[in-house]
Amino acid sequence: MLWELSKKGRITQIKATILLTFLLMMLVSTSCTSRNSIDNDPVSVSKEETMKNSQTPQPIGNKPEYVLLMEAAYGAPSQSGFGSAVFFEQLELNQELEKVALQKYKYFVGELWDRYGEDAWIGPWKEVYARKSGMKKDIVAELQGIKDRDASISVPMILDVVENAEAARHALSAAYDDETVVELRAYNLGDGGAMSGILVAGRRSNGETIFLVFLLD
Image (cartoon, rainbow, N blue to C red):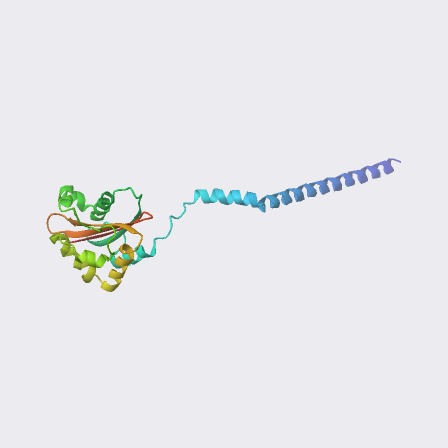
């Protein structure tokens, strides 16, 4: 009798253990299924991706082809203070073009601006050309027609002496002769001594603005 009771007790214990194991397996399986469901949930993925994107700086966008052509011909933005460089910026249509052009000029001159003094660099600064509304757009002819003696000295340097002059002229035309160009101005540069140059600024109707800075001694 005691043996029978002991036997039944062991059987009951074994059944309880099996049942407990089964329940634990079901619990683990349910947890995994739930996790997979969350991982595959488009809303969850979308939220995770959105969070990731919010922490990653988004690219502003590629430069227009005409800017790349200009940079290939005259150089990318720099603070060399010598030679030439091209700057591109998105401006509001009511921003004063000359003010921004001065900023590019100062940036290009770099540390020489303070070494020689602002007065030295600002002294020769003056507008030497402004395209009139409705006139034919021909940047090469317009530059060649500049009457200012100091600025006119720099014109052949960016039209003829520049390496691969044909490609450079094509780049100038692509940048400044497009039908969307609504404002074009040129300014004389220099340090009041040996350095002299020219800055050409053109703004499009969408606010895209390109600056060519040239400075040599």
